Image (spheres, rainbow, N blue to C red):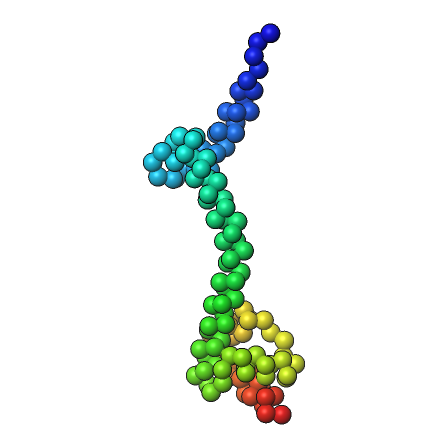
Length: 119
């Protein structure tokens, strides 16, 4: 009885890995042995960074909001606390976009936050 090697599945698997490694430098794009390691590592980083991206964007929005708030005499934490007391529900992304594109509206929010802080 001949030995079964399952060649078609092996070739398909290797072809899939080499396709993912297209564009990598040197042997990592041509040889399965090295391509497999590079693709595995790349997929780990991609998985991690898809989650990390959410954190990094939130940090960016907070930095932008804080910079504009400080220019107008209030810090970030007091501003957010004032918005909560004034029952204004906006997420950080919306606040950041508002601060960049419609400064007058953002200044009105700052004033409402200041009023809610003192009241």
